[in-house]
Length: 165
Image 1 (tube, rainbow, N blue to C red):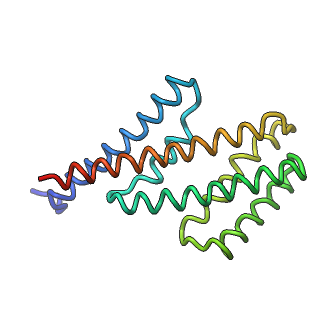
Image 2 (cartoon, rainbow, N blue to C red):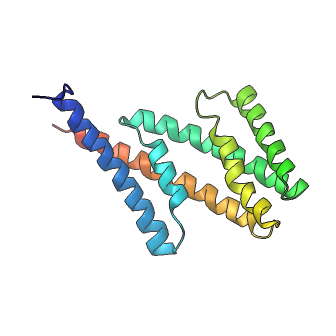
């Protein structure tokens, strides 16, 4: 008895899962093993950007880059201007949502900008300090961009191998 899922979909699901695992492993090896950096944000980004098709992955990556950079810029600006306070985090989140919803208008991916604000600003609020937050924010932003880049490269390579017959 079959499960009702066509064979070709099972195979493409396996390929997709393999690409995500390869992307996460590359992020782990490069960041953790070579630089001793926690790779979690890069691995999350590799999963988020991973798409079955190269063009979809590239579009997701471009959107993620734009929204990540906007979120990072707003978070750092609010940290510098207002410091690490719950109210400044909420004000930064509201600001970045307004910017992305009204001016950037990339459907579905605008949520990355407020997530970036939270990733960057929350540690300072919890530690009651901005010491290190700017550097931490820039490192996390770099990790997110690196993970997305890894996913796009893997999607590109997979598209080249699958088109060769």
